[in-house]
Length: 303
Image (tube, rainbow, N blue to C red; front, top):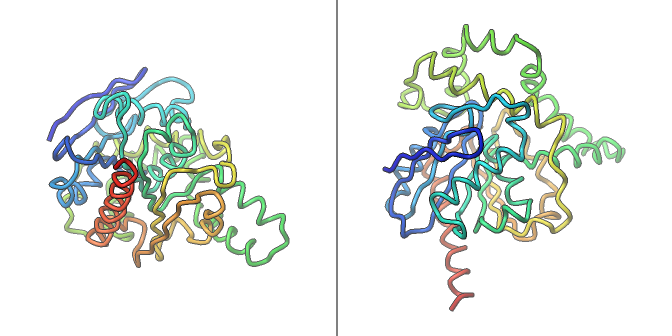
């Protein structure tokens, strides 16, 4: 493993590179409340066949935080990803992107913007929607008069209760500082992480490093979401993996994604939110199979 600090504007991003640099690059984006270690199972399983790239997002773990206003706005997060790709793969390098939770939300925006999408060969999304598209489809559902659609998106509003809580002043930080470690362990164990997983063997200080700074994700993005992609506007091949027992993301919010992603492959895992832990073998197989198919297609076109 190679450990590097990638500087992008006012932050330094702790980045780990595993495997063979001559192989296709898989870049993993973690969510909240997580760090790059959440992908350790995937790293061990896939590093012999791929170059694996993981990093702690800004303000998380070993990465530094920015004190600038709006430091967690989507444009800053996308710039971080590009900086790491440039450092590891070169100015013209391309990667296969995989995201979970907020990592998935950010990944959707990355492949939506043409400037960034050109760097991505494929995208695998787990438990995270395109933020702007989700809100657009929710508005359409509520004004449609279609009771089924209203019910579907109303369920997501209920599942997203924590977003409203995280936007309260002071209280979230106070609770996390006082009870963050047991709450974090309980949350992950109840949603797919094995209680014996070494990922859970951390301190309160480390939990603070995972949870406190990136509250900005919830405070700076939902109320000013990224623009909605045009129909058929997302050209990147996408594998959408839906965890059928997810307590935070409803599968119904993805029902119209085929209209926006011409090359969309849908998969399901009977799992909760941290499906890449509880169904690691199946998740790894889906990622590898999808990437291999894309690589074969690209090689055939190049021949």
